[in-house]
Image 1: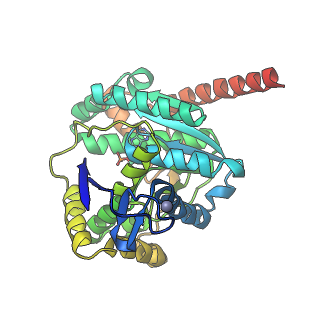
Image 2: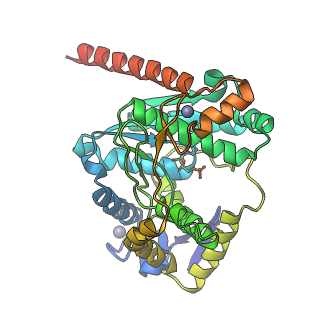
Length: 347
Ligand code: AMP
Ligand code: ZN
Ligand code: ZN
C-alpha cells in the first residue's frame, strides 16, 4: 500500500477498500481498525459529533453562537453543525474576532466570513481595532502581559458578551479531542482540578452572566477534523498564529500523546471517554467557582471587576466592557432588522 503524506496527514491510496462498502478507502483509522471511503469517513466523524450533541442537548437549543476562528477545527465544527442541526431548527450565529495579528488575522477573517456565507448563517465580525481602538499585541505590550494570555482573555470575554446579548443557549467552540487531552493533562500536572472540570463536553449557563460552552469535536481528533475539512472542501486558513510561542507545554504534550497513540492505538479515545465519565468527580474535587457581576460591565467576574475591564482600564484608562456590549447590541439589532426585511421580501 502507498501512503501519501499531506501536512501530517497520512492518506491511504489504492489497495485498501472501505471496511463498510468496499469502495476505495481514503483513510485508515488504526484505533477502530477501519479503512474508510470519503462517505463513510464523513459518517464516522458525524457519529462522534452526534453523540456530543445528544449528550449536551445541543439539538434542543434555540440559539447557538458558533466561534469561528478561520482555522480547520472550528471550520469543520461549523460545517457539521450547520448540516446536522438543520432539521432541529437551531438558530446558528457565527462570530469571528479579528484580534489584529497582522496578515494572519486578515486571512482568518476572510475564511471565517466565506465559511459562514457558504453554510448560510449570519456572521458577526468583531474587529478589535475598530471596536476598542487597540489590537491584542498592543494591549499585551502596554499591559506587560504575554500575548497569548491577553488573546485568550479577550476571546473568552467577547464570545460570552455576544452570547449574553443574543440570549443564546450555548457558545460552541472547535476544541478537538487532542486539545482536551493536552489541556487536561496540563491541568493534572499542576493539580488544578477546577481547570479539569471546566473541560467537560459542555459547561452550564449562569443566566445573564455567562453562557455555557459546548465542544462538539470533543471526540474528534485534529487529524480527523483536517481530513473532514479537506474532503468537504471547507474553506479554512492553513497557517499558525505568528504569536504562538515556539514550544508551549500543550504542544509538547500533544507530540508525546501522538507518539503514544502510534504505539498504543486507541489510547486517546479511551482517555477522552473515561474523562467524560469521570467529570462529576473532578467537579466535586474542584473549587466551587461562584460568579459575581463585574461592577463596570455587569458580566461574570470572580472579583469586583472582570479581567477584561481591568485590562482595558489599565491600558486605555477606561474599562471597555460596556462599550463592547453596546457595540454588540447595535450589530444584533441591525441583523434582526435585516432578517425581518428579508422575511417581508420573501413573503
Ligand atoms: P484556540 O484558543 O485558538 O485554540 O481556539 C479554540 C477555539 O476558540 C476555536 O476552535 C474557535 O472555536 C474559537 N476561536 C479561536 N480564535 C477565534 C477567533 N479569532 N474568533 C472566533 N473564535 C475563535
Ligand atoms: Zn464506504
Ligand atoms: Zn467587566
